Image 1 (cartoon, rainbow, N blue to C red):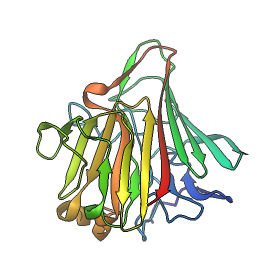
Image 2 (image 1 turned 90 degrees about the vertical axis):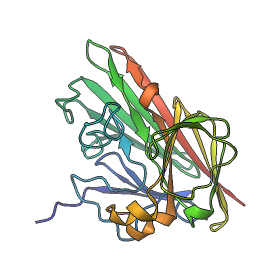
Image 3 (image 1 turned 60 degrees about the vertical axis):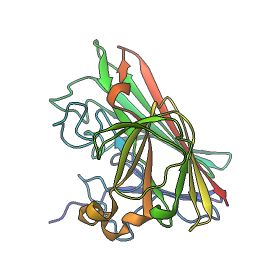
Length: 277
């Protein structure tokens, strides 16, 4: 018997449509009024409990990928498949606000056994804004890697232009090299980069006739990812749809991890807006 589908909360207002899951506090879909979907989800995506689709904006925490030293499982941490509690839901000035919470009572790991509280506030309107807040509820400091792993829908990733990263240093996870970005970024092959940059990033999409603008607070890194033709078909929920997204993520990873003192809260915000070309 297949795993059941998690609860999907639908938002339909004059300003946007969206879908948010309690499992993983995953914002799966979002489209401001008058625009095509802005978050990528495979047309045949199947969401099952205990899995995290390659879609929407997954929460990566308290490690990124296999962790800084490798070997950490599951990839991107254990909160992506945890069931978060919906703490509040309200609508104000055309924006729907959902606040989800998970704690060490609901999700933990022997590899990371620290008391914590994690909250994600999603503001869904003409702009999408996500705020991830980590609180240390224990007596000892801890270190986290974190990312809001946004899959941005594009017409053709081979034709988009990413601006805002010029001059930033980055670690290329494909080649293992550390390099400096020169000019705008055009993707021509598998791309997996961690940029040390807090600048706004623009995704200019001539196929869909729009520009996506990513801005953040509290994030030292921008992660850019697309698996390309060699790896995309082998990834669940991606397949032959790999040309139709680029991940532009807010993150604190690698050398930019976050140390949270006892009783302290640290937040990272991801903001996404859409402009017509």
